[in-house]
Length: 359
Length: 121
Image (cartoon, rainbow over all chains, first blue to last red):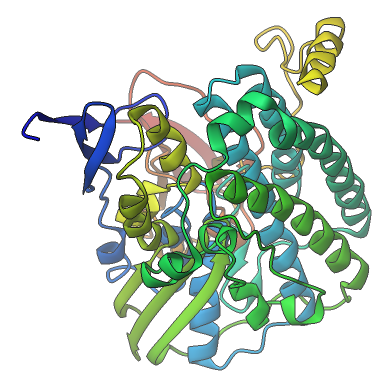
């Protein structure tokens, strides 16, 4: 029993988009224990927000994550709006849903591509990323930038979307839906893909609850938990049902994300159909005072923001709990007992975003 | 398994999805935030709102010397300065910043209603 070896997985590894290190204690090919080491991309953004004005902070917070920047800014703006008692115009709330769901689409499509790459299906990876490019183009055309779209501001949005552009978005997301339906067949039915994912990394419903999994990770284990159902932005006026799979393995988590792409397409089309006319922004007055907690559903799960203001232009404290941080404990508990070859897929199915986690 | 094989054969017969970049360039989108190109210095009133709103501290405005300066390597191209400018004299360009060998700043100095632009280190 004493012939255990420790294999460092990461921080540089072909499957990891970002630096996360797991020290894997191995017995032959099986993992006995996984010890995480994070801290490779800490940038001190929480501290930086204490030195900038609260209106400038939107731009700092967007840079916490390179994939779901819009959602981070949304969480911050919603918190500030509730502190300052700002009523956001209806049109801005719907625009936030449209951009937010576009972000979810591009994040999930990126993830599906990375997953295909992780199990060595290079052509599938390229297919998915080609489809994602259509979403990125909409983002650049409407917001001016591909990823850090900077359209949120306290009190509404910075840009409006013209009616003809809304019609274009409607048809493009429909095209993306058709494209994804094509690759879905491969993801769900392919023998090799199923062989790598079915029954790997099973997280039971009880354990998902116990270890505090969030987002697609929890929904893949049968917990119908989605912060969007609380009805922030315009989600209370849209028809929304959390996507749930019950198996709790890698395959179930992949199916949750695939189906969430369709859900996003549906939400965008609903929002475009219902979007009212009117102003997109109300200016803020004075400085925030007090403390607030704000939650949003990111592509990776629930993000929680805590903010404390003191009535001046700068904040006392801003604290972010990101979804990947909540999912790492569940990952560590899932790893023991699996083979070394399954580790890349297991790590990917929590959709790790390390620069969010370390900020 | 055969879904993907059909797809692969279809891809063999079609054009590549990527562009042949340096030869074939895509037109930038109209409202793209490419870079802050500079300022129409004869219109500038040196109020300094742009430098106070800049989240990256990239802009320096000097009222006495009548100068406006931006560090393109600090700028995060958020467009906050363009939005808050009361005279709307800061220019946003759709194309991205070109690579450079030196970290030069862009400096504009107003000379009694005559525009001048110099590059200072």
